Image 1 (cartoon, helix red, strand yellow):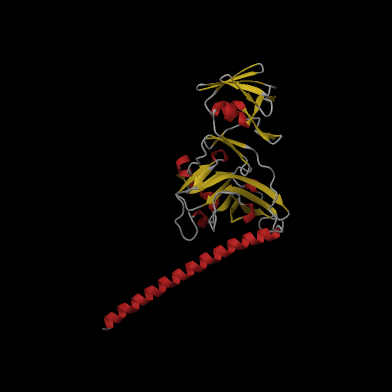
Image 2 (tube, rainbow, N blue to C red):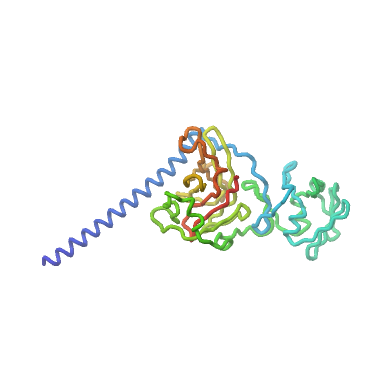
Length: 325
């Protein structure tokens, strides 16, 4: 009988220990959620509940969800129409562009497009098309209205005001692990000196990362377990400096960022957002960088960071070469 009682006591002791761990885990999670919500409320209150005014972001052109690189002249807005340098878009779509004087011919598959710089009309397989704005030459590049690409080259084109992305073709955003092969995290451990806990793959005791996905701004957009990241921008207001991330991450506790600088310890930042700013599938996350009233960070600028790291539950650590330098 005594033996049985002893076993029952042990079971009770173990159960009580497990219960304590569960209660502590729930309390910790509650504190984290409250802290996250408090930071949102504090941010909004400090802004007098007004959405911050962020400087206009550059227009990006994507073909099948991959960015088109423009080495010199960039896409621009004119009279509420998006104009793009046609050569780089045509090349990305597999078209062949030929320029003779002011006459431009583009051949793509069974389509032949002809236009003249300065003219408001063009032809596609002999059919006349009207351009909202005449094709124009700017520093050696020919700009045409975005819609011209759709009509002339037979591609689906969409202007997204929220991201300032021009989508051409497919909008299927690749998963990061399908886009980039991971590498060893060893060369990047120097960034986490005395803050190794920030190498955890998630919050609350996950194993430290052993590999890393190293990406650049040109690899955006990409998805992290189905949640897309489109772009990162920096702005400064009377409260300090912030990073604004355009994402579809709508978790109660969104993924945080870590700023990595070899001359300074890693700095983490949790995201805040304004409900009224959400647009469809998009959420705009604000991450604190520095403030004149913050003794620890008042002299810190995001340009000092080599990498922005998305701290997510993922097969490897996500390191983005700082696009804000």
